[in-house]
Length: 204
Image: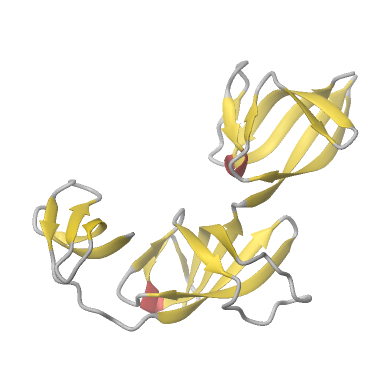
């Protein structure tokens, strides 16, 4: 759990991790690591719309957030499926709760930012990271076929290993990461949630 409060060392509002809860909780600054106590004013949470993307689908949910806090691209949240808006294109269920990662923040003025105060946010755009759908390119004698792989977000793919997806069996030759890196050394490990594309060759 974390909150945004004034840091006496940084002299700025910073993200703090809660070390000990209570009326005057003990907090640790995420930047300078200073540990200090603080009085946190209780504020009423507000509903913020969240658009969640998975594969070629997207659906709406809501999340309750403190209007004084900030949201950043890359932040992760747990979305409870019991708090929802009407889905576009049908009711798409994601289960009781799912983890998502923020990809874009849309403000009430129409702009898109990488960081914003909750009170200024219109929509949080995100992607599902509990379960992901990956693209893979399988090359054989100059021909390239594209397949889709559904995988748990925390599953590790390893360059040089063999994977079997249904009737498809292939060896991983490289992995393109979402941050732009290309992993191609034998033994390189890539977590599914961070992968953009897998490259491989068929194995008999």
